[in-house]
Amino acid sequence: MARGRDIEREAGRTLSGKSNLKKNARGTTIARPLTAKQRREVAALAQRPDGEIDYSDIPPLEDKFWRDAVRNPFYRPVKRQLTVRLDVDVLVWLRSQGRGYQTRINALLREEMLKRMGKKTA
Image (cartoon, rainbow, N blue to C red):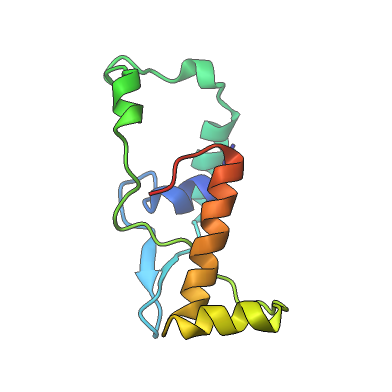
């Protein structure tokens, strides 16, 4: 469960409703550090039990909602650069299909990951 600063970063807003996000020189959106008051407010909220959350204004979600749900079209997973050793024949096959062989590697690995997790692929 996310706590403290994680809650603020995920929401992208402070408790006062002001945006907690800013852009750096490269145009990347980053979260501003919380003020001491905001940290105290978040800590107080994090201490409250989940049973105190009032869900009365949120309609219950039916199973049909989740069956028809699709991934956010604007979702972009975080990428991390790393070094991987591949067999030469596998690399030749991937590159023979044209540009984007690294994207294809990621797509193949994601498909296999989702299959093993029991989730449907897009």
